[in-house]
Length: 438
Image 1 (cartoon, rainbow, N blue to C red):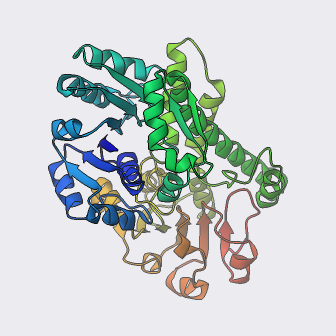
Image 2 (image 1 turned 60 degrees about the vertical axis):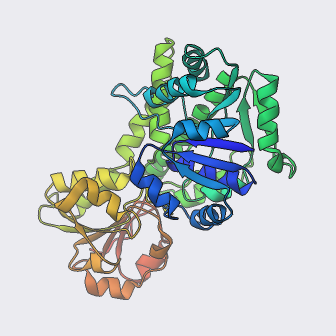
Protein backbone atom coordinates (compact mmCIF):
# COMPACT_ATOMS: atom_id res chain seq x y z
CA UNK A 1 0.00 0.00 0.00
CA UNK A 2 1.13 3.57 -0.67
CA UNK A 3 1.11 5.73 2.47
CA UNK A 4 2.00 9.36 3.21
CA UNK A 5 3.23 10.51 6.62
CA UNK A 6 2.90 14.25 7.19
CA UNK A 7 5.43 15.32 9.81
CA UNK A 8 8.78 13.64 10.49
CA UNK A 9 9.11 14.29 14.19
CA UNK A 10 9.51 11.48 16.66
CA UNK A 11 6.13 9.85 15.99
CA UNK A 12 6.08 10.46 12.25
CA UNK A 13 9.55 9.12 11.55
CA UNK A 14 9.15 5.98 13.66
CA UNK A 15 5.67 5.33 12.22
CA UNK A 16 6.82 5.87 8.64
CA UNK A 17 9.85 3.65 9.02
CA UNK A 18 7.76 0.92 10.65
CA UNK A 19 5.13 0.99 7.91
CA UNK A 20 7.89 0.75 5.30
CA UNK A 21 9.36 -2.21 7.19
CA UNK A 22 5.93 -3.87 6.88
CA UNK A 23 6.24 -3.68 3.09
CA UNK A 24 4.45 -0.43 2.25
CA UNK A 25 5.75 2.41 0.10
CA UNK A 26 5.94 5.36 2.49
CA UNK A 27 6.34 9.03 1.58
CA UNK A 28 7.39 11.19 4.52
CA UNK A 29 6.56 14.89 4.14
CA UNK A 30 8.15 17.74 6.08
CA UNK A 31 8.41 21.49 5.44
CA UNK A 32 12.02 21.60 6.70
CA UNK A 33 14.08 21.33 3.49
CA UNK A 34 17.40 20.81 5.30
CA UNK A 35 15.93 18.01 7.38
CA UNK A 36 14.42 16.33 4.32
CA UNK A 37 17.74 16.50 2.45
CA UNK A 38 19.50 14.97 5.42
CA UNK A 39 17.01 12.10 5.60
CA UNK A 40 17.36 11.46 1.88
CA UNK A 41 21.09 11.06 2.57
CA UNK A 42 20.47 8.58 5.38
CA UNK A 43 20.74 10.97 8.33
CA UNK A 44 18.30 10.12 11.14
CA UNK A 45 17.32 13.45 12.77
CA UNK A 46 16.45 11.94 16.18
CA UNK A 47 18.24 9.61 18.57
CA UNK A 48 16.38 6.35 19.03
CA UNK A 49 18.06 2.97 19.56
CA UNK A 50 17.85 0.60 16.55
CA UNK A 51 16.01 3.13 14.37
CA UNK A 52 18.91 3.97 12.06
CA UNK A 53 19.37 0.38 10.87
CA UNK A 54 15.69 0.00 9.94
CA UNK A 55 15.63 3.52 8.45
CA UNK A 56 18.60 2.86 6.14
CA UNK A 57 17.36 -0.61 5.17
CA UNK A 58 14.06 0.77 3.90
CA UNK A 59 15.66 3.67 2.05
CA UNK A 60 17.95 1.21 0.27
CA UNK A 61 14.97 -1.06 -0.46
CA UNK A 62 13.18 1.96 -1.98
CA UNK A 63 10.20 1.73 0.33
CA UNK A 64 10.93 4.92 2.31
CA UNK A 65 10.98 8.33 0.64
CA UNK A 66 11.21 11.96 1.79
CA UNK A 67 9.84 15.13 0.27
CA UNK A 68 8.69 18.66 1.02
CA UNK A 69 5.97 18.37 -1.63
CA UNK A 70 2.68 17.39 0.03
CA UNK A 71 0.75 17.33 -3.26
CA UNK A 72 3.22 14.90 -4.83
CA UNK A 73 3.00 12.51 -1.88
CA UNK A 74 -0.77 12.89 -1.59
CA UNK A 75 -1.32 11.94 -5.23
CA UNK A 76 0.69 8.74 -4.78
CA UNK A 77 -0.99 7.56 -1.60
CA UNK A 78 -4.22 5.94 -0.52
CA UNK A 79 -3.73 6.69 3.17
CA UNK A 80 -2.46 9.90 4.79
CA UNK A 81 -1.13 9.82 8.34
CA UNK A 82 -1.01 13.12 10.25
CA UNK A 83 1.90 13.00 12.69
CA UNK A 84 2.00 16.68 13.54
CA UNK A 85 2.95 18.52 16.73
CA UNK A 86 0.15 19.49 19.11
CA UNK A 87 2.09 21.61 21.63
CA UNK A 88 0.39 23.01 24.73
CA UNK A 89 -0.87 26.56 24.41
CA UNK A 90 -0.48 29.13 27.18
CA UNK A 91 -3.61 27.77 28.88
CA UNK A 92 -2.45 24.14 28.60
CA UNK A 93 -4.85 23.18 25.81
CA UNK A 94 -3.47 21.38 22.74
CA UNK A 95 -2.63 23.65 19.81
CA UNK A 96 -4.30 22.11 16.76
CA UNK A 97 -3.14 24.74 14.27
CA UNK A 98 -0.66 22.41 12.53
CA UNK A 99 -3.30 19.69 12.22
CA UNK A 100 -6.01 21.99 10.85
CA UNK A 101 -3.60 23.68 8.43
CA UNK A 102 -2.57 20.37 6.88
CA UNK A 103 -6.21 19.23 6.82
CA UNK A 104 -7.02 22.41 4.92
CA UNK A 105 -4.20 21.68 2.43
CA UNK A 106 -5.36 18.10 1.93
CA UNK A 107 -8.90 19.28 1.25
CA UNK A 108 -7.63 21.62 -1.44
CA UNK A 109 -5.27 19.08 -3.03
CA UNK A 110 -7.01 15.70 -2.98
CA UNK A 111 -8.47 14.36 -6.22
CA UNK A 112 -9.75 10.94 -5.10
CA UNK A 113 -10.87 9.03 -1.99
CA UNK A 114 -8.36 9.07 0.88
CA UNK A 115 -8.26 7.79 4.43
CA UNK A 116 -6.87 10.50 6.72
CA UNK A 117 -5.33 8.93 9.84
CA UNK A 118 -4.74 11.15 12.85
CA UNK A 119 -1.63 9.82 14.60
CA UNK A 120 -1.05 12.96 16.64
CA UNK A 121 -2.18 13.12 20.26
CA UNK A 122 -5.27 15.28 20.07
CA UNK A 123 -8.28 16.24 22.22
CA UNK A 124 -11.59 14.44 21.94
CA UNK A 125 -13.49 15.71 18.92
CA UNK A 126 -10.45 16.46 16.74
CA UNK A 127 -11.43 13.88 14.11
CA UNK A 128 -14.72 15.76 13.69
CA UNK A 129 -12.84 19.04 13.28
CA UNK A 130 -10.48 17.57 10.69
CA UNK A 131 -13.46 16.13 8.85
CA UNK A 132 -15.18 19.54 8.83
CA UNK A 133 -12.07 21.35 7.57
CA UNK A 134 -11.50 18.92 4.69
CA UNK A 135 -15.20 18.79 3.77
CA UNK A 136 -15.26 22.58 3.53
CA UNK A 137 -12.69 22.38 0.74
CA UNK A 138 -13.83 19.40 -1.36
CA UNK A 139 -16.77 17.24 -2.41
CA UNK A 140 -14.54 14.21 -2.95
CA UNK A 141 -15.32 11.38 -0.47
CA UNK A 142 -12.83 10.67 2.31
CA UNK A 143 -12.72 9.21 5.81
CA UNK A 144 -10.99 10.40 8.97
CA UNK A 145 -9.60 7.85 11.41
CA UNK A 146 -8.05 8.16 14.87
CA UNK A 147 -5.05 5.85 15.40
CA UNK A 148 -3.07 6.98 18.46
CA UNK A 149 0.49 5.82 19.05
CA UNK A 150 1.77 4.27 22.27
CA UNK A 151 5.51 4.49 21.77
CA UNK A 152 8.00 4.75 24.61
CA UNK A 153 11.01 6.88 23.78
CA UNK A 154 14.07 4.70 23.96
CA UNK A 155 12.01 1.63 23.04
CA UNK A 156 10.08 3.02 20.07
CA UNK A 157 11.33 0.55 17.48
CA UNK A 158 10.49 -2.38 19.74
CA UNK A 159 7.07 -0.89 20.53
CA UNK A 160 6.29 -0.10 16.90
CA UNK A 161 7.20 -3.55 15.63
CA UNK A 162 5.66 -5.43 18.57
CA UNK A 163 2.78 -3.29 19.86
CA UNK A 164 0.64 -4.52 22.74
CA UNK A 165 -2.43 -3.46 20.77
CA UNK A 166 -3.49 -1.25 17.86
CA UNK A 167 -6.30 1.20 18.62
CA UNK A 168 -8.35 2.49 15.68
CA UNK A 169 -11.25 4.90 15.91
CA UNK A 170 -13.34 4.72 12.75
CA UNK A 171 -17.04 5.01 11.93
CA UNK A 172 -16.66 3.96 8.28
CA UNK A 173 -16.53 0.27 7.32
CA UNK A 174 -14.44 1.17 4.28
CA UNK A 175 -11.87 2.94 6.47
CA UNK A 176 -11.85 0.04 8.96
CA UNK A 177 -11.04 -2.36 6.13
CA UNK A 178 -8.17 -0.16 4.97
CA UNK A 179 -6.71 0.04 8.49
CA UNK A 180 -7.16 -3.71 9.00
CA UNK A 181 -5.16 -4.31 5.82
CA UNK A 182 -2.33 -2.03 6.96
CA UNK A 183 -2.05 -3.75 10.32
CA UNK A 184 -2.63 -7.29 9.08
CA UNK A 185 1.06 -8.20 9.66
CA UNK A 186 0.42 -7.52 13.35
CA UNK A 187 -2.95 -9.22 13.65
CA UNK A 188 -1.50 -12.28 11.88
CA UNK A 189 0.84 -12.71 14.87
CA UNK A 190 -1.92 -12.34 17.45
CA UNK A 191 -1.59 -8.63 18.22
CA UNK A 192 -5.15 -7.29 18.68
CA UNK A 193 -6.58 -4.41 16.70
CA UNK A 194 -9.27 -2.69 18.75
CA UNK A 195 -11.86 -0.81 16.72
CA UNK A 196 -13.96 1.88 18.40
CA UNK A 197 -15.46 5.28 17.66
CA UNK A 198 -13.14 8.20 17.01
CA UNK A 199 -13.80 10.04 20.28
CA UNK A 200 -13.13 6.98 22.39
CA UNK A 201 -9.90 6.38 20.48
CA UNK A 202 -8.75 9.96 21.03
CA UNK A 203 -9.50 9.74 24.74
CA UNK A 204 -7.76 6.35 25.04
CA UNK A 205 -4.39 8.00 24.36
CA UNK A 206 -4.89 10.82 26.86
CA UNK A 207 -6.30 8.47 29.47
CA UNK A 208 -3.39 6.02 29.07
CA UNK A 209 -0.65 8.63 29.42
CA UNK A 210 -2.40 10.44 32.24
CA UNK A 211 -2.89 7.19 34.17
CA UNK A 212 0.83 6.40 33.87
CA UNK A 213 1.67 9.90 35.05
CA UNK A 214 -0.58 9.34 38.06
CA UNK A 215 1.06 5.96 38.75
CA UNK A 216 4.56 7.48 38.69
CA UNK A 217 3.49 10.36 40.89
CA UNK A 218 1.75 8.11 43.40
CA UNK A 219 4.95 6.08 43.74
CA UNK A 220 6.93 9.28 44.29
CA UNK A 221 4.52 10.24 47.06
CA UNK A 222 4.98 6.80 48.63
CA UNK A 223 8.77 7.22 48.34
CA UNK A 224 8.66 10.56 50.14
CA UNK A 225 6.51 9.03 52.87
CA UNK A 226 8.96 6.12 53.17
CA UNK A 227 11.65 8.59 54.15
CA UNK A 228 9.42 10.00 56.89
CA UNK A 229 8.67 6.64 58.50
CA UNK A 230 11.86 4.73 57.77
CA UNK A 231 10.50 2.33 55.16
CA UNK A 232 12.42 1.36 52.00
CA UNK A 233 10.63 2.25 48.77
CA UNK A 234 12.49 -0.48 46.87
CA UNK A 235 10.95 -3.12 49.10
CA UNK A 236 7.52 -1.46 48.90
CA UNK A 237 7.79 -1.25 45.11
CA UNK A 238 8.58 -4.96 44.79
CA UNK A 239 5.75 -5.89 47.12
CA UNK A 240 3.25 -3.76 45.22
CA UNK A 241 4.43 -4.69 41.75
CA UNK A 242 4.13 -8.41 42.46
CA UNK A 243 0.36 -7.92 42.51
CA UNK A 244 -0.59 -8.54 38.89
CA UNK A 245 -3.40 -6.00 39.20
CA UNK A 246 -0.69 -3.36 39.66
CA UNK A 247 2.41 -4.67 37.87
CA UNK A 248 6.05 -3.61 38.19
CA UNK A 249 6.20 -1.00 35.43
CA UNK A 250 6.13 2.73 36.18
CA UNK A 251 6.67 2.13 39.90
CA UNK A 252 10.24 3.40 40.02
CA UNK A 253 10.51 6.54 42.17
CA UNK A 254 12.63 9.48 41.11
CA UNK A 255 12.69 13.17 40.38
CA UNK A 256 9.41 13.32 38.49
CA UNK A 257 8.24 12.56 34.98
CA UNK A 258 9.06 14.65 31.91
CA UNK A 259 9.33 14.24 28.16
CA UNK A 260 7.13 15.16 25.25
CA UNK A 261 4.00 13.28 26.29
CA UNK A 262 3.10 12.98 29.97
CA UNK A 263 3.33 16.68 30.96
CA UNK A 264 1.62 17.86 27.80
CA UNK A 265 -1.14 15.26 27.87
CA UNK A 266 -1.96 15.77 31.55
CA UNK A 267 -2.27 19.51 30.95
CA UNK A 268 -4.40 19.00 27.86
CA UNK A 269 -6.79 16.58 29.57
CA UNK A 270 -7.20 18.96 32.51
CA UNK A 271 -7.99 21.78 30.08
CA UNK A 272 -10.38 19.62 28.06
CA UNK A 273 -12.20 18.79 31.28
CA UNK A 274 -12.54 22.46 32.19
CA UNK A 275 -14.06 23.16 28.77
CA UNK A 276 -16.74 20.58 29.58
CA UNK A 277 -17.23 21.93 33.12
CA UNK A 278 -15.47 18.86 34.52
CA UNK A 279 -12.67 18.97 37.07
CA UNK A 280 -9.92 16.32 36.84
CA UNK A 281 -8.92 16.70 40.47
CA UNK A 282 -6.56 13.73 40.47
CA UNK A 283 -4.67 15.11 37.45
CA UNK A 284 -4.41 18.59 38.98
CA UNK A 285 -2.89 17.02 42.09
CA UNK A 286 -0.56 14.90 39.94
CA UNK A 287 0.73 17.93 38.09
CA UNK A 288 1.29 19.86 41.33
CA UNK A 289 3.14 16.99 43.03
CA UNK A 290 5.31 16.36 39.96
CA UNK A 291 6.40 20.00 39.79
CA UNK A 292 7.65 19.78 43.37
CA UNK A 293 9.15 16.31 42.94
CA UNK A 294 11.38 17.35 40.06
CA UNK A 295 13.50 19.60 42.28
CA UNK A 296 13.08 17.77 45.60
CA UNK A 297 16.82 17.09 45.90
CA UNK A 298 17.87 20.75 45.71
CA UNK A 299 16.77 21.36 49.29
CA UNK A 300 18.76 18.26 50.30
CA UNK A 301 21.85 19.68 48.59
CA UNK A 302 21.37 22.97 50.44
CA UNK A 303 20.92 21.13 53.72
CA UNK A 304 24.15 19.20 53.23
CA UNK A 305 26.10 22.40 52.59
CA UNK A 306 24.63 24.27 55.54
CA UNK A 307 22.02 26.21 53.60
CA UNK A 308 24.38 27.99 51.19
CA UNK A 309 25.49 26.52 47.83
CA UNK A 310 26.90 29.71 46.30
CA UNK A 311 30.07 28.85 44.44
CA UNK A 312 29.60 25.12 44.87
CA UNK A 313 30.35 23.05 41.79
CA UNK A 314 27.68 20.43 41.15
CA UNK A 315 28.48 17.72 38.61
CA UNK A 316 25.38 16.48 36.79
CA UNK A 317 25.21 13.10 35.12
CA UNK A 318 22.44 13.02 32.54
CA UNK A 319 20.42 15.73 30.82
CA UNK A 320 17.80 13.82 28.81
CA UNK A 321 14.41 13.34 30.46
CA UNK A 322 15.09 9.58 30.45
CA UNK A 323 17.77 7.20 29.19
CA UNK A 324 18.12 6.16 25.54
CA UNK A 325 16.81 9.41 24.07
CA UNK A 326 18.11 12.89 23.28
CA UNK A 327 14.75 14.41 24.25
CA UNK A 328 15.07 17.14 26.89
CA UNK A 329 11.49 18.38 26.79
CA UNK A 330 10.27 18.90 30.38
CA UNK A 331 13.45 17.15 31.59
CA UNK A 332 13.98 17.29 35.35
CA UNK A 333 17.63 18.15 34.71
CA UNK A 334 16.60 21.54 33.32
CA UNK A 335 14.45 22.37 36.36
CA UNK A 336 17.28 21.46 38.68
CA UNK A 337 19.88 23.38 36.68
CA UNK A 338 17.69 26.49 36.71
CA UNK A 339 17.17 26.31 40.49
CA UNK A 340 20.80 25.47 41.28
CA UNK A 341 22.05 28.36 39.14
CA UNK A 342 19.54 30.69 40.79
CA UNK A 343 21.00 29.72 44.16
CA UNK A 344 24.53 30.47 42.99
CA UNK A 345 25.88 27.01 42.21
CA UNK A 346 27.98 26.10 39.18
CA UNK A 347 27.07 23.14 36.96
CA UNK A 348 29.33 20.77 35.03
CA UNK A 349 27.11 18.39 33.07
CA UNK A 350 27.69 15.25 31.06
CA UNK A 351 25.29 13.60 28.62
CA UNK A 352 26.82 12.32 25.39
CA UNK A 353 23.46 12.15 23.60
CA UNK A 354 21.41 15.11 24.87
CA UNK A 355 24.19 17.67 25.39
CA UNK A 356 23.72 19.43 22.05
CA UNK A 357 20.01 19.97 22.66
CA UNK A 358 20.69 21.48 26.08
CA UNK A 359 23.46 23.68 24.70
CA UNK A 360 20.98 25.18 22.23
CA UNK A 361 18.87 26.32 25.20
CA UNK A 362 21.39 27.13 27.92
CA UNK A 363 24.46 28.06 25.92
CA UNK A 364 27.42 28.70 28.23
CA UNK A 365 25.37 29.02 31.43
CA UNK A 366 26.76 25.63 32.42
CA UNK A 367 29.90 23.64 31.62
CA UNK A 368 29.76 20.57 29.35
CA UNK A 369 32.12 17.74 30.16
CA UNK A 370 33.56 15.36 27.56
CA UNK A 371 33.20 12.36 29.84
CA UNK A 372 31.34 11.34 32.98
CA UNK A 373 34.47 11.48 35.12
CA UNK A 374 35.59 14.79 33.59
CA UNK A 375 32.41 16.35 35.00
CA UNK A 376 33.54 15.34 38.50
CA UNK A 377 36.78 17.33 38.44
CA UNK A 378 36.83 19.38 41.69
CA UNK A 379 33.08 18.90 42.10
CA UNK A 380 31.54 19.48 45.51
CA UNK A 381 28.79 16.95 44.78
CA UNK A 382 27.36 14.73 42.04
CA UNK A 383 23.72 14.97 40.97
CA UNK A 384 22.37 12.04 38.90
CA UNK A 385 19.45 13.21 36.76
CA UNK A 386 19.16 10.50 34.06
CA UNK A 387 19.47 6.72 34.39
CA UNK A 388 21.90 6.16 31.49
CA UNK A 389 23.37 2.61 31.57
CA UNK A 390 26.95 3.93 31.67
CA UNK A 391 26.27 5.38 35.13
CA UNK A 392 25.18 2.04 36.62
CA UNK A 393 28.58 0.67 37.60
CA UNK A 394 31.01 3.58 37.96
CA UNK A 395 34.55 3.55 39.30
CA UNK A 396 33.93 4.89 42.81
CA UNK A 397 37.65 5.04 43.56
CA UNK A 398 38.22 7.31 40.57
CA UNK A 399 35.18 9.37 41.52
CA UNK A 400 36.60 9.93 45.01
CA UNK A 401 39.91 11.12 43.53
CA UNK A 402 38.20 13.57 41.19
CA UNK A 403 35.69 15.10 43.63
CA UNK A 404 36.26 17.54 46.49
CA UNK A 405 33.59 15.75 48.52
CA UNK A 406 32.38 12.16 48.30
CA UNK A 407 28.74 13.17 47.93
CA UNK A 408 26.04 11.85 45.58
CA UNK A 409 22.47 13.07 45.18
CA UNK A 410 20.78 10.39 43.10
CA UNK A 411 17.48 11.30 41.48
CA UNK A 412 17.11 7.87 39.84
CA UNK A 413 18.09 5.42 42.62
CA UNK A 414 20.91 3.97 40.54
CA UNK A 415 22.72 2.05 43.27
CA UNK A 416 21.94 -0.43 46.04
CA UNK A 417 22.53 1.42 49.31
CA UNK A 418 25.45 -0.81 50.30
CA UNK A 419 27.53 0.21 47.25
CA UNK A 420 28.02 3.92 48.06
CA UNK A 421 28.24 3.02 51.75
CA UNK A 422 31.10 0.57 51.13
CA UNK A 423 32.88 3.24 49.12
CA UNK A 424 32.51 5.89 51.81
CA UNK A 425 30.13 8.20 49.97
CA UNK A 426 27.39 10.36 51.43
CA UNK A 427 24.44 9.13 49.36
CA UNK A 428 20.97 10.63 49.15
CA UNK A 429 18.41 8.94 46.91
CA UNK A 430 14.61 8.88 46.71
CA UNK A 431 12.50 7.00 49.27
CA UNK A 432 15.41 5.23 50.97
CA UNK A 433 17.58 5.95 54.00
CA UNK A 434 20.42 8.42 53.53
CA UNK A 435 23.94 7.01 53.77
CA UNK A 436 25.71 9.53 55.99
CA UNK A 437 29.34 10.40 55.45
CA UNK A 438 30.00 13.95 56.56
